[in-house]
Length: 480
Image (cartoon, rainbow, N blue to C red; front, top):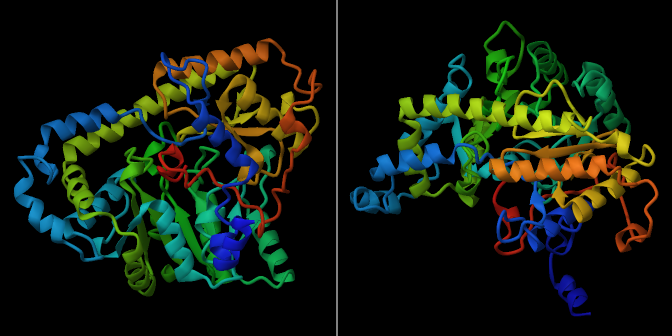
């Protein structure tokens, strides 16, 4: 009763469920939070494989910090900078920070493009950057097209407080979930029939959850599409440096330098250091827009989620070290490739297939459709709950990514040490080899009788998020 009375005193946003905390997808995170695995202290706990964190190169970062104590204003070596940095409040950001980030973005993209530091707008992580760009480009009730499967947090980041809609663009496993011009046209026309104004297209490149990249032909087709429709293109490139094998990453910035007709005012890039550098806790998000008005507006709006000047100072020092940055990028790619190779080999030993075109990201797109009782999302959720509660692995079900086909799961492999990875693979092998009968459970578990699943095709009301406001939860760390 008290909760209902409080709701009457709150706004619709505050009292609603737009954040997505109570979605079925979130149950896996709660299972991990309540029983986290530890190699020695809790070996039977839930292993977190739903968190897209890059923990494979922390030793490189730690070594650099030890060798560069002046980078921090909280050390005896850097304390002389404390006053100036601590007092800095300009929402444009430290000039050296913007210069270093622009240079790093160029290096990650093979120095094939250039970025103007004056177009760098900082935000509190890519989450804040996406919401800011949504506020800048669309009014409540207007929409962005988003190819499926896509990161569940977009439902929160772009929609929760802005009132913007997301319209799925269908893809199929038969062509490795490739974005096609036909699918874009169909989604655009369906929106028109529903009297929904489409203001933009959001793409992730490399893809979360697929771990694939958009090729040059597809990117050029996308640019042509948005130019013809006169709608915006938002390119999420936060996994740009996680590409660990050929072909190389192609940024939308590279396409714009080619001989292609496009209104540059329509194109915007979202970037961060959460994935490429493994800094989700530092909350460094970036908007890079070719539109002067968007840069101006986004910079004013960034006042609500600035990167601390202390963090800017340290990041500027680190990213200005060319030798370190080059070494970090090379070693990160090698370590990601090695982890990907070991993990896919382990899955292949029990005949589990993954999307073969994946060569980027911190995760695999795993096909468990053969373990489903029937080809439905209800069966996918039932299997997912068995994996969480019995196998004790928190992997993410495809329906939460709006995947149009049941049976796909995202499994993260870069957020753990080698020993934990081997434990995870051992649990998977045991589960499959025992041929656990998930199709006909011996008894009805409590969660089976009350299972509720929203359709992944509803773009206005279906909200899923891997984040939680629970204090001390790892879910508040970063976009996942």
